[in-house]
Amino acid sequence: MDDKLKADIGMIVDEAVSSRLSNQQATLTFNLENIDAEDRLKKMLNVDKYDMALYDFSQFLRKFLKDGEGERVCYKSYNEHKEIVPDYNTMEYVKVMFYECLENNRINLDD
Image (cartoon, rainbow, N blue to C red):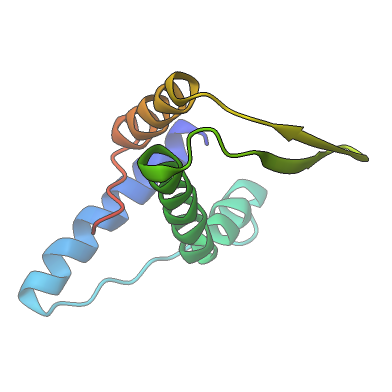
């Protein structure tokens, strides 16, 4: 995600929170003749999908770390099905990195 988009999203989130608190409205304007603006608009329109994907992954990590150690995980890599048994320490590291990435981008899944 580019810095401009991060800044735009951060500004929108801040405005949405203050808007919710004071019952004001916010309007976003995009110059669709600009290809970059059109791409940013498309990303903004999909923000609910991004939010759900991040939430689903956080729940996957939570479930695994709570009671999934030692269980086999099946997945498809390219055209090949693989099966692994991830260890707890590796998954804990993935969890830490995942939440660090969210925090660095000012994303709170509880909001």
